Length: 388
Image (tube, rainbow, N blue to C red):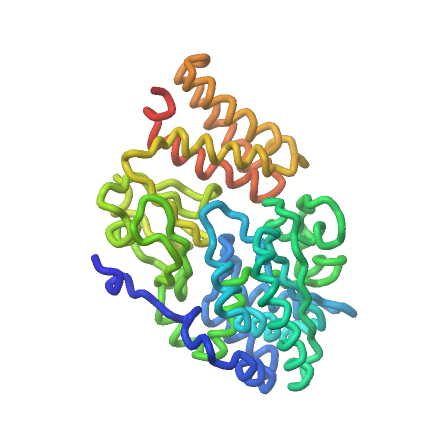
């Protein structure tokens, strides 16, 4: 199947020189409730992986009464295999800033931040003057909103929204208890909308192209398109914007090298789909959701080594705040190593699977809750590689 048959889309990077400022002006001529209605009607859901309805998030924040509100762009792109937000910020930063400005107008925020992954600080040379010029333009068109930049310190956990707030407030990056949620109690305890880089661009583009053209893409439960970071055993590694709802088989036919045995959808915290399931799985919120990472593995790859790498990553990046995640990640890693070295029987995998399920329900945040995704899907589908 050709890429054209996958309905390649060009919303994010189209019209690079178009004027996002004009889109903000268009939004300012509308009532905030009208904008919320359009975002809700579009069916746009967060593109960071969680998939929370964007319009609903804005609506909840708008309804909060507060002397200060914030808009934060989560650019802490730390998920292994994901690199599309970097490209967006590098090529079309003004579209991201415009999305933040529209959100600020809707909820009544005067201050916004881009929380940038530490490893992306090379983007600052372009981002800082771009933001300064954008802030000046906002004042000129009558929107009292200023965007600042905050550089993280390289912790994966700070991609979790509440840990991100803690980091910005000068504290150790650890997740907060929920509720309350950010739309009520976010940065500095104030109502906050935090959206992924890609989500904000789509908000801007929905305002520019309209709701209906956006809704024509994707499926009923997964409206629109999505930017994918394709890597691994492929001759077409890179950034691609595709319609949501495509089949994994379609994806593999286009981007695989003819010997694909598994696709890791959603990075280390996502799901591993084996060759036997390519034909009956779709990429979308009603199938397998993803923040954008698509790792392709061929028959030369050891899935045991893949899983071991993921677990070593999670052991390193767990903040250690809650026991299920702190201890669970270590025990899963030690467990598969013990089985591989013959120190434990293969039946011990069953105990490890039960541990991973406990982590899913008992861990405090998405890190510990998502470790079982990769663990269970790889162990279930490639059990023989865990043993021999």
